[in-house]
Image (cartoon, rainbow, N blue to C red; front, side, top):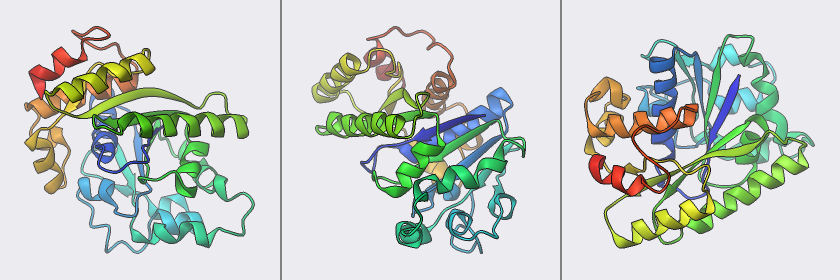
Length: 272
C-alpha cells in the first residue's frame, strides 16, 4: 500500500488541489482504490469532493482521539468510484492538546490507519495542514512518500528546505529509511523572470525529484473546487486537467511525456 503525503508548512501552495486531484487520477486512470486522508482544520479536501464536512458527526479527529471509533465509522465514499475520504474539520485544532499525555502521540495516525490495507485500499493520500507541528509529524510517521508543492514565490526555497530537513529528521529518529521526498511540484507558475529563476534554483536543489510540469493558474480548477468536483468531472478537456494529469502521472512514477529535465518552463508556457 503506497502512502503519499502532500506537505508544505506554507499555506496557499495548491497542496489540497494536488492531493485531491492526484487521488482522483489514481482511481480513474489506474483503477486503484484510494483513501484521501484530510488532516487540515479547514476540511478542504472533503469539501473539494462535495462533502459537507460541517455536518458530519465524526471525522478524523474522533478516529485519532476516541478508541471506540473505527476507521469504517469515519470513512466516506465520494462520487468517484474507488475514491473514499477520511474527512477533517476544525476539531483537528484540538488534536495536540487531546493527545498531549500520550508518549506515542506521533504514532496515532499510523496506528489508527492500520486496518486500511486489509480494507482493500491500494493508496493512502494525505493532505497535511500548513504547519510542521504534531499533526504533520503524525503524517510523516504514517507515510512513505512525500510530495512537496512549492509556490514559485520569493520564500519558496526556504519553506521547501524546512520540509526536506523535517523529512530527514523524522526518517532518522523513527528508523524509517524508506521515508523520502519523491516529488517537488512547482505551483503558482506565471511567466515572470522571478518564477523562472526560482524554478531553475529548484531544479538545482532537486535535480531528480522536480516535476517536469509546473502547476499554473487555471480558472477551471477553481471552478471545479467550488462545485465540489475534481477537474475531470468538471472540465476534463481543460488545460487544468492536462496539467494535473501530467503531474499525477509523474507522482505515480511514470516518466514525464514530451519534456526533459530543465524543460519545465517551456511546457508550463503552453498549458498555464
